[in-house]
Image (cartoon, rainbow, N blue to C red):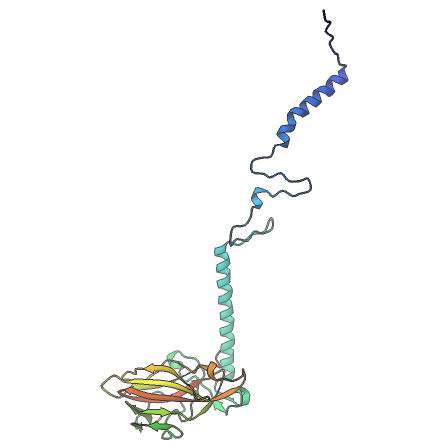
Length: 276
C-alpha cells in the first residue's frame, strides 16, 4: 500500500504560485494582435489604420495637417490663374497708357517713327494701331501696286479714324488686286484690320494675304463685306514667319484681291501690340 504524500506550501510560496498561474492565463490575450493591426518588430513603427496609403491622385499629409481634396485643389488652381490674368491685364493697360498717342522710334528694331492710337475703340478694340503706308488712300494709292480693274473711288469710310474724314477709298472689282508698299514690322505686330463694304449687288468676296520678305505668301483671310461700311475682324500677320530675332524687324506687304463682286476698302491699320 502506497502512501500519498501531500506537498504543502508556506504562505509566501502559495502567493508566488498563484501569480505565475495568472500570468500564464493572461499572456495569450495580450500577445494576440487585433485583426486590423499589424504587429511589427520591437523597433519598428506599426502603421495605424488611419495612416493608410493614399488613393491614386490623393496626397496624404502629416498628422494634424489638412489635405485639400481634388476639387478644392482644382478651384485653387483656377483662382491663381484668374489672379495672374488680372495682373497681366493691369500691366497691359499701363503699357497702353504709357505708349498711347506717342511716337515709337528705334525701340521696335529699327522701324521708322510711327504714331499709335486706339482707332477701333468704338468697336470695343482697345488695341493701339498705326496706319499702314498709304492705308487711308488719300494720296491716290501712292506706293501701292494695282492690277486689273482697281481704282480710287470718290467715297471714304464714314468713320473718323484719323485726324479727319477722308475723301477716297480703294475699289477692287472681280479680278483686281492691290499690293501695299513694304513696311517695317517687328515680332510685336500680331495683326491688322481695315474697313470695307460691298459696292455691287452680287456677293463680294475679298482675299487677303501677307507677303513676306522671303517671297512666301500666306492667306490670312477671305472676307465677304456687307453693303455698309464696317471694320473687318482682326487678321493675323503670322509673325512667326517674320524670321527675325526677338527684337528684330522685317519688311512685309499686304495683298488684297477681289474674287467676286466689287469691294471698297479703306483705313488699313496695323496692331503693334503695345496694349499687351
